[in-house]
Image 1 (tube, rainbow, N blue to C red):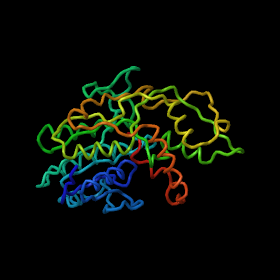
Image 2: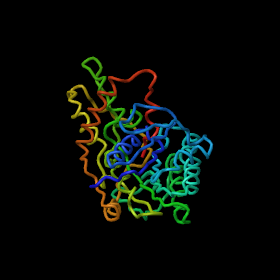
Image 3: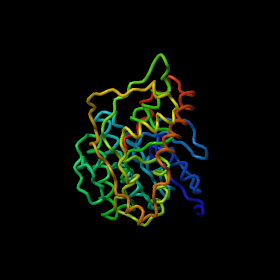
Image 4: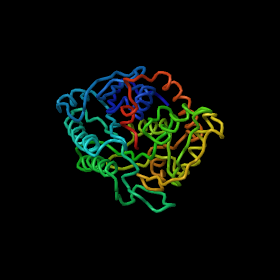
Length: 327
């Protein structure tokens, strides 16, 4: 595939888990990438960083940052762990301001917004959720994400912007934040020894998980896609047992089975007991399909957690790294 030369992309939330991979994917395609976030993080080769809080910064600062952009990606957001006030700020006013900024720019950059499969709300087990499925979110995270997605879709329908929404399922792979189930499990497995065996409580849920690099590839394809004013589901297209996923990660860790035991106990499931995205529309309209098998994704998650564990310092708390988790 030929590179796009002299094109510029701005990634809001570009230092987060998903944002970093999006920056890398766009750089590989020849984009000049500007990553915008509130705080700097580990540098990304070939990516310029700008410290800017898109929620509270003056609107003209956002316009100035994006004025030469051909593409703006909104990968910002708050995690499950965030409180409702911070979720609301990240998912609604930020999107509103970003849409207004993009709409005023003479170059009319394309806007790709990352939504969440949880915007659909809980569904009956066995449901493959298509884009026309009714939205009935029940958690603050899902409700605020849906409002943000609707702002983008409404602006595109009105002809103010050229943009689309990618509704992403649960995300895993290298860099998975510790605040997520799989990231937290990897962190705990690193500390498992003969003297400190690991007790794991698992839900019976089945959920659609997608590797973060496949999400980044979807964003890169959406950047040049003619799709506007539409939602596209991005996921593996299957529902995996959480027990199976935990087993794959434990296997990748090579921690002996005798040091891991499952505990019984009620675990509240925030996102419903079943998620499975119907991903046929993304395949048909963008030519996108997932390429990274979950076994490989969890192997790479484990491998990346080793280097993260080695370089962790008290000044980089896990909570800060989890801000874009929850998709």
